[in-house]
Amino acid sequence: MLIHPEVKEALASNQPVVALESTIISHGMPYPENVKTALEVESVVRQNGAIPATIAIMDGQLCVGLDENQLEKLGNSPHVWKVSLRDMPYVISQKLIGATTVASTMRIASLAGIQVFVTGGIGGVHRGAENTMDVSADLTEMGQTDVAVVSAGVKSILDIGLTLEYMETLGIPVVTFGQDAFPSFYSRKSGFQSPLRLDNPLEIARLLKSKWEIGLIGAVLIANPIASEFEVENEKIETFILDALDKAKSEGIKGKELTPFLLKTIANQSEGESLEANIALVKNNARLGALIAGQLVSI
Image (tube, rainbow, N blue to C red; front, side, top):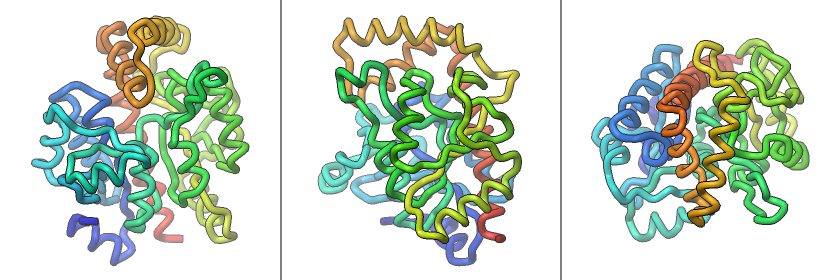
């Protein structure tokens, strides 16, 4: 593991640190918007009082905190692995470049001692999982790793209802920030009520501390609704999602290639509207994550 000196110093002196994943750079957005967004998200974390630690695997090393050259390499290299937990030993042993998913970023963040992680949206139970058994490793990792996950809810390409049920089975608290409705990534509402609601970062930090102090292992999902001026209405995005799913099925795309394919197809169909929403929601999550991390180190 290679921890950036700034991140190492922040952790040693009990300053707030926020982990950031890297698949959004390599597989979530086109170049150069991906690198530009990664730098802007790190800037948002700093503006709100925390130190950013973007996580990736570079030449076989677990890197916690990246410089601009490394971000550029992740965003503009043709062969970057999308690394979940099962892929980590291979990518490390072969000394490859890998962008980390929610699950693998959580694990590396936990190993480094980082308790707050910001992403766009988590993986979960895919639509049709009763036939495909396609359930993201993100959920399994959230059931066993003590890292708070700040996201704009569950990716709307998934079966949100089944994902919420599965998180209940795993004992993962699901808290929505500032509203009763559970968000769905591009939209502020999903058609489902949030199991829990809290309205400020201090309350969320207290929940995290309470959970881990009493020995309840695992994550807390903090669902942060996209700002209303950037959201894409649920009914509109659903049309794009269904078309993208049909296209993926006809082209035989599945497994870890499915989510990047769907996001790219939806961005094309929405003429960039979904990409704009994606960028906005990640920045919004970075702000909230930094504020929670700040409260967590002070209580």
